[in-house]
Amino acid sequence: WGEFGRTPRINKDAGRDHWPQVGGALLAGGGFRTGQVIGATDRLGAEITERPIHFGEVFASLYKFMGLDPHAITLDDFSGRPQYLVDQQHHALPELM
Image (cartoon, rainbow, N blue to C red; front, side, top):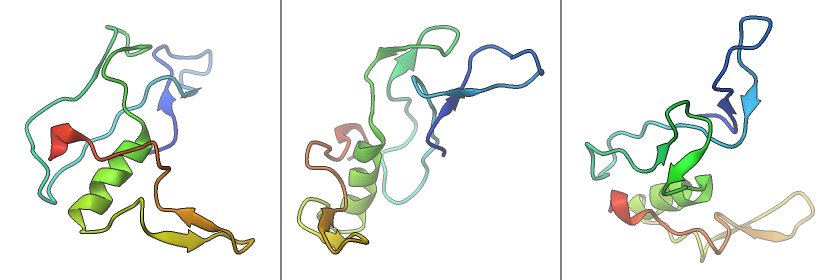
């Protein structure tokens, strides 16, 4: 899983460029409720049409399954400031629970 999806169209060099509007991920195991697709895009995979998901929600789900509360645990950044594992606005995906 990367920080960007790929453009829905091939570029002039027969490749694809970064496309931050849409990306995909495949999750398996770890107690997740499986056999489902969460969210949708248009037929080109260019724009989200249903249930946008932030990567913070995925990480909050992973931490929850590991028994960690991502909104209670902090780690210090390089400046010594505490940072939560996941931003406070992101929560575990109910579809995976």
